[in-house]
Image (tube, rainbow, N blue to C red; front, side, top):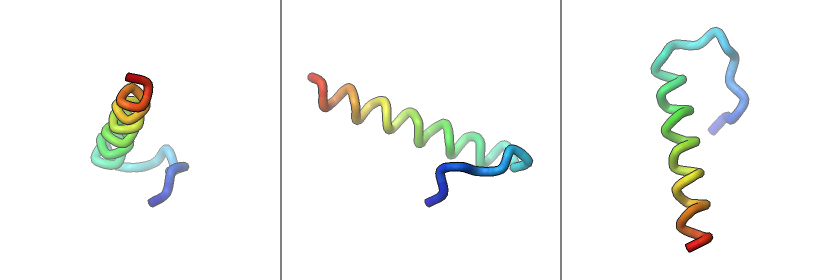
Amino acid sequence: MKLHLPHAQTPITLQAHFQYLLQLIISMKARHY
């Protein structure tokens, strides 16, 4: 799974990237609490 994706991509890739970031934040919160 690539992290650094070209900016010239479809919105679908952006959505997937956003969801990945959300999961990362949630996992971080779960670790803290």
